[in-house]
Amino acid sequence: MRISELSRRSGVSVPTIKYYIREELLPAGRLTSPNQADYDEQHLRRLRLIRALIGVRGLSVDATRQVLGALAEQQASPHLVLGLALGVIPPAEGEGTAAEAPTEQDGAVDALVRELGWQVYEGSPARAELARTMAGLREFGVALDWTGLLPYARLAEQTARLDLDALEGAPDPLEMAERAVVLTTLLEPALMALRRLAQEDESARRHGG
Amino acid sequence: MRISELSRRSGVSVPTIKYYIREELLPAGRLTSPNQADYDEQHLRRLRLIRALIGVRGLSVDATRQVLGALAEQQASPHLVLGLALGVIPPAEGEGTAAEAPTEQDGAVDALVRELGWQVYEGSPARAELARTMAGLREFGVALDWTGLLPYARLAEQTARLDLDALEGAPDPLEMAERAVVLTTLLEPALMALRRLAQEDESARRHGG
DNA sequence: ACACATCGGATAGTTCCACTATCCATGATA
DNA sequence: TATCATGGATAGTGGAACTATCCGATGTGT
View (cartoon, each protein chain N blue to C red):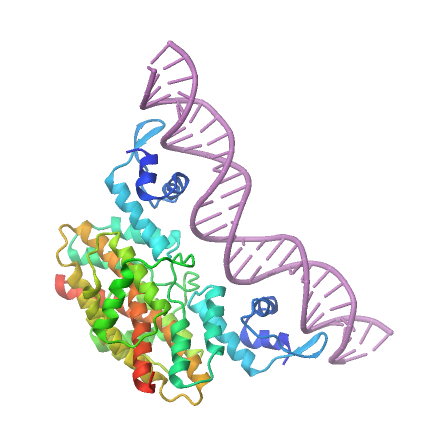
């Protein structure tokens, strides 16, 4: 198909598609002549994924590129696929101005991970994110050291089990990775929304709604 | 204290403080003369909260104003305080272009809430958010109807219990509301980071790391 | 074969947001 | 009295995510 059809079928304008190609979120079409390119269903799938990550999830173009990069990088064992797809996904992201110096919170994260016996990569962005938020919380005198996070971490384990269950039946690694990305990133707002609702309900129960 | 001291103590530049006052995130100081105003510890606390929400959490100025608005609106029972503080907080936020038509997903959310027996406000933004993400997931053929969310919802209930526990000892309603906001919004990235790490660990266990 | 729409590719422009800088008259301060 | 900081107003900046325009080449209908 040509770019106009890709645009029509995806609901994304032609200039925007070109922009995504320039930004290397989407591979260029196969040139059939110097000024004519051919796009296939893969492009359409990928474009929809991009729109979901940027539009639904609100990721930046840069973050989206990283996520898609992780997706392309595998072709290996299921764990590597997931490790890459899940591990590289940059979480929420605050004012992450590169090369953050290791803070004292890193020690807390290490302690937490050790206590839980988790086998996780040293350089996971999630570790840094965790340290960052803990530091942020401290500024408010919220006394929440790593032991306070333990029960949350136990719940996270159960959540992760559900997540992995949902990925079980994937036909091929690439499909699995894509599902992992979708499930991990797109489900986040839903999980947080559930938390809000549950908080409201719990509050009603405790204090009488 | 005057604005320069507020700036020094908070680490926020004077122009930025003025900007926040213009944007009504921060109340203006008490004028002691036409060109001299006085700020107190409340301003400092609030300014730090603003910085956490915008800088650490990455909320937009607009979303931050809503959160702070919820904070100001109470003065009532603990449940109302929490309902307002937690309920009004806009979750993650996608391309929320106002007045979204009720989709078929709303029915699914209703069913979910009914099944769980949750007592939650009809107009919670979290409900709309939930419907929106489910619609987003559908676009990818992720077969996840409301029954698929049930186990996640059960875990959310437990998470909410932990959250409410953490708020128990608050001295006054305003303090409680502020803590609720901090805990709800600032803890989100941490919870998501924990989920990422737990996924990585679970993947290692299942597929051999 | 010929007119005309469409294409890929490049470049420049737009909009929005979160600041940031500059000005000014006034009042505080040494 | 001579700075100096202040509140308030207005304009400007930089980055991000598009969006619009132009070009020459090419496909398409007749």
